[in-house]
Length: 140
Image 1 (cartoon, rainbow, N blue to C red):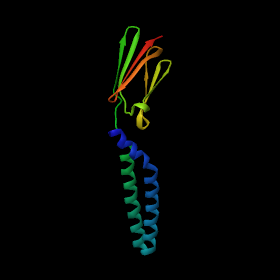
Image 2: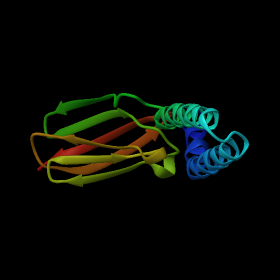
Image 3: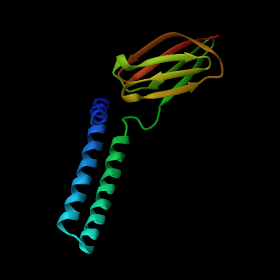
Image 4: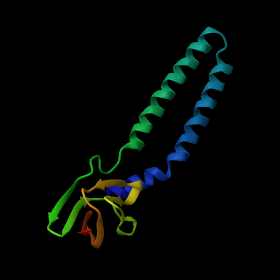
């Protein structure tokens, strides 16, 4: 449920930036037209300060993701290696790519992490259930 909420927030990011920009321009224009002189300048600077504060707060909110830390474990099982990792879904978005000693894991909401192993591996099996990805690989 956390990932779908973050996905909805990501969809509205460009719209929020445009709305904040338009709002900032409108408020500045009205402040300059209504109060010319020193008071107008002070009010305009106050409005700009408040708008930059809210832009900063909205950016912080948008940068928060479902997983702050990538939680995973590498298990060495003789000729095989397994990686068990917490990855945001949905299942269709979870992908695993092998590049020599590197295992690239992709998930929902732009999630992408790389695990570097001490040896080359080849994918044997991949399962994903309830946010937990299990990758079984053979050492080469």
